[in-house]
Length: 107
Image (cartoon, rainbow, N blue to C red; front, side, top):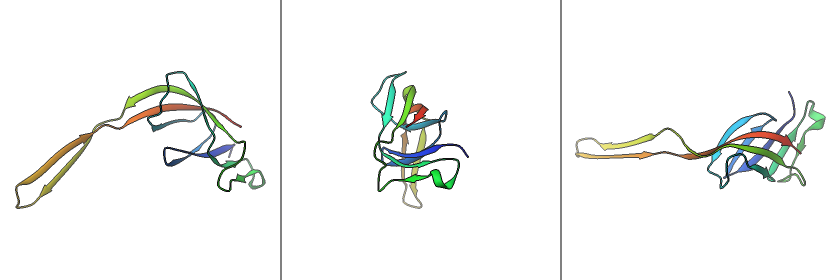
């Protein structure tokens, strides 16, 4: 096990290590930009003694990331609702926007 962190963004929590790539809900940024997340909830290390747990956040801890692709669209989800014997049908579609990041540092 190597160093890792758990941070919050967009109402969700993500467990990451340096070099990880992940998709977050759309962030307002450009390709190649550096982003810093200050809402770090947990920092982990090689042993149990190196784990730091925030109450609720760890002061001074940051997760730094580089934007690989800003504002991409995911595959289309089809939402289909039907009520049997009522001739009622509703079909909707949704494409979630996301930002792809690569984690560069845990500080």
